[in-house]
Image 1 (cartoon, helix red, strand yellow):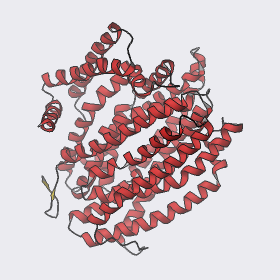
Image 2 (tube, helix red, strand yellow):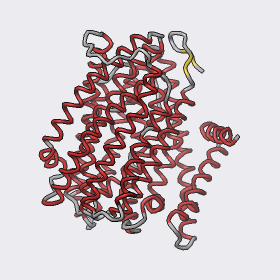
Image 3 (cartoon, helix red, strand yellow):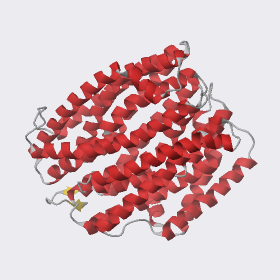
Image 4 (cartoon, rainbow, N blue to C red):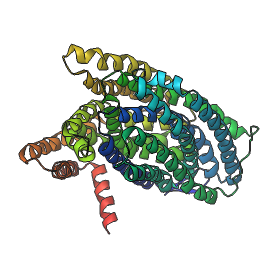
Length: 527
């Protein structure tokens, strides 16, 4: 336990990060099950799959813009600081006022979004025409109200995280995934693809409602004085609003980057949009599990003790080491063994082995910037804890410009210059985004170091991690070549299992503290 500024005791960040990671793991596993079931019924190269995945990005833009990113960065530092000082009544008034403002803004945007969907489709997927475009428009209009509910669910997450109730808020998306899985299982076998895509959109809306509903009772339990009022006079609410605007723009810039990828993918042959979406769900798993879990756990604690730069540096450096320990082997696995990962999770029904190899190519591209993306999340959280939301915005603008320029070059002309199938341009999109991610992370680190002192990962530590992961991957590759053709899941167990065990054994032998901590935590769980 560590002391808060007001004398309260806060849970250790390691335990909090573990709870966040546990919740994210369950929700991501549910997401992977959903993706596998989706792949079974939709395959990769179908207009319905491309239409649904492209449509899914538009309401997701609203969720990501207002939800976990912008709302957490602006709301949690203010609310958590009030809670840490014991000012619970003022904290709950701020939470109620923020929820009211958020609900009004989201209601307006959902209405505008439903009415303006054809314009949005023209912007996000200009390559879609005819029935494919009409289907995408229909799906978007169904999905928009569900996105509004997910934004309110993110407000619940902010309240619960500030009270160190991490597990429920990050496990709640299981309900959303479960509703979509149930829709596919119930209707998938006897419903034609275009109709099934629309029904799946309705299942997503139902899941959004469930995700919000499971959190509300606990929110009222921890925030007993919560009242929904339009309080614009409160200085705390004004601070949240002022901080929200630059973070909102920053998140918007990041989302523009994702939309550039989607737009470019829509110009590639059928299958590129779905392949990119499948790969993104896979490579965001380590980002969420290890980057988001540490960043989310640190933000409330950092917000309560942001004036102590020495403590801030210590927390940041420890978090960076935690992230790198798990993300480096994830990046190497995507690069060297991505076909095994993709086949085990997706190869079923209409999804073929050739499709898994294609997704591997996109995953390999994502490995370029995987470490930078996860480290960048923690650096951004440090700025937010310091109530600085403008510096990350400036660097996000640099990232989106680079992503746009490099994304076009890597996705459209480069495959042609190399004599490759244009479909492989999707791998160029993830590789170019990775390069831009490194530039953004290095800018964040340099600026923060000038402000609070030297932070970052020791070169020797990073070299050890990459060496261990590469050696473990070589062993996994050897097993892959030696074994006969088996079911993809069995192959994954025989290849990825030894890969992970070898990495842990080597890092433990090199006395890397994070390996010892991870093994001790697993041992405690077995008792």
